[in-house]
Image (tube, rainbow, N blue to C red; front, side, top):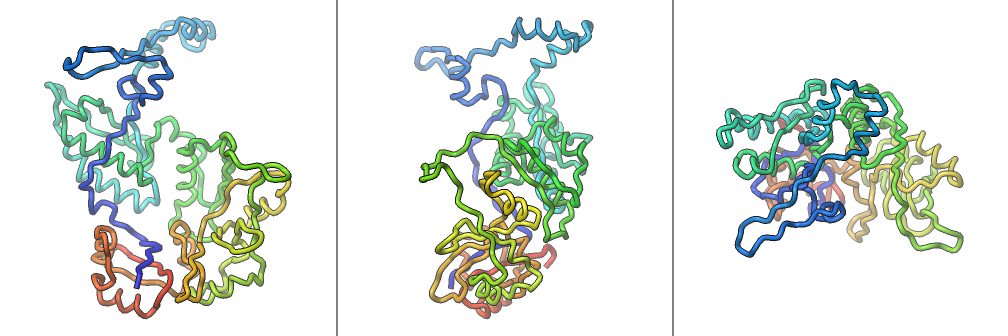
Length: 397
C-alpha cells in the first residue's frame, strides 16, 4: 500500500539540517551583486595575471552631482543635516528578516534560532573586533523580525555565522522566513489588520507585504472557514499565451452546482460535512474532466461571477482537491496539501493520527514504509484502505 501524505499539522522542520546549501547574498554592495546586475551596471572584473589570487571588483562610486543638486533644491533636508543625510544614503542596508507563519509555529522557530544559532554568537570577535549579535527589531511584535549586521568576510571567518546564514537561506526557500527590508514591514503594522478585516491589495509585487497581511488576517489559528478575505492584484507583464480565435483569454472559472455529479463520490468517500460550501468550489474546465478543484469564499465567488466580462482573473482560490484516478479507489480525487487546513474541520473520514516517532520517520527516511510506523497508525491506515489520507500530528501526543 502506498502512503499519500496530505498534511501533518505540525512538522518538525528542524530535525535534519546536515545539508549545506549554496550561500546566496542579497546585499547591495558590488561585491555581492549577481553577475547579471554587475554587467548591466557596467562593472568589469579587474584583470590579474594567472595565479595572482582572488579577482575582485571595483568599488561603486557613491556620488551623483545631479542627485545632490536636485534634492538640495527641494529644501527637504535642512542644510545642517545634509552631510549626515548623504552619509546615511551611502551606508549599506542591514540584513533583516521576518519569521513567518502562524504565531505558534513562528515562536517555535524563534526558540530554535535562539538556542541553536544566536547563543553561539556571544562574545565573537574577528580580527580583534567584536561581531554584533543578531537583535530583534524593537517595534515588531513578539520578536518575530530580526536584524543582522553581517559582512561576507565575517561569514567566511566565523563558522557559527556561516551555519546561521546557511540555515536562514534554507528556511527562506522553505517559506518559514521572509528576507524583507524593515521599512517594508511597517505598512501592514500601521494598518493594524485584524482577522475580521477585508484587504484589497492593489499592487502585490513582489509580495512580501502581501504575505505579511495574509498572516495577520490568519492570526486566529482556530478560524477555518469562511477564511479571511484578501483580494490581490499583481502588477506585472501578462504571461505569453497562444492566441485563441477571439483573442487572449484565460480558461473559464466554472463553479459547482448544488447537484454537481462528481461531488457525491467525494462527499461519501471523505464523509464531508453537510456544512461544507461545495457550491464555492470552482474548476478551470468548462467541459470534460475536472482536474483541480479550488475553494473560494462567497465574496470572491460573487466578484468572479459578476465580472467575467470586465476583469481578467488569472488565479483564484486554494486548491483543496486534485484528480488522481485509480481503479482501486472509488473517489477520483485526492486531498490537496495546500488546502488541507481548510478541509480538515469538514472531514469525518480518512484521518490518521500520528505519533512524534511516526513524523520523524516520514520526514527523514527515503522510504517510510508503513511497517515502520506505530502500531495504531498501521491499524488505521489498513482500516481505511487505498486512497488519499490526511495525517494529523498534535504536539505532545
